[in-house]
Length: 266
Image 1 (cartoon, rainbow, N blue to C red):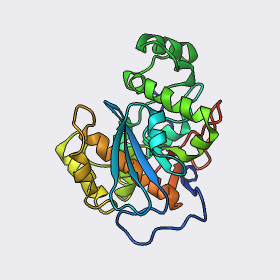
Image 2: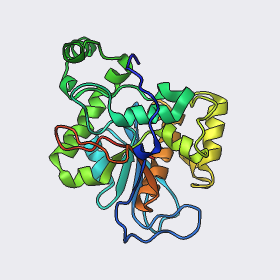
Image 3: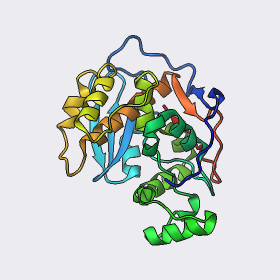
């Protein structure tokens, strides 16, 4: 994405995350959680969430027009893992994005540059590019611009409530799938039939029988198949967060100018 690439980092950039050390760990496999968890991905209709509540064997898939509505539907103390940049830099590349690209190797292009805080509120792609160019001499990619409004929604919600910021965590589905795949990048893209089959196979041991049902619940004009699979990958990370098994990139994340963590969890 036109970003400067740095040499690979050592493993001290990866840390384990514990949200609450005294949370009981679910025993055995299957679909279960000792605490409500949600995985979230952006979709054409707004936001697609998959949620698992304690004592419920089925994952619930819901669509929300706005992120604030989603948070109301997944109330505290639910742990929410969302595929969206949280914590925005003033200039340069976020360390978490760099670390994610380095882990993904050949699939590094799936992590594109997060918007800079200074471009929030731009009226269009041209203005956003102009603002970024004024900050660091280069324009804004269309991929980054296309998620700008969703980034603004999440940023506003988390800055308004420190309690929400503590329970909402950034993740990236491709990094999640890499972790599920024994640390190896997936050989096929998510839009291909082979890529979809591979992702379904990786999710199956964690959420048996759930993905196929969820794929049939919402019209494709609102929720694409890859939105469902990506949200389930985010749910997998939320589950790892409450089990104190998640990795954090980097191990000690910096805070942005508004006090939000700049970290990707998986």
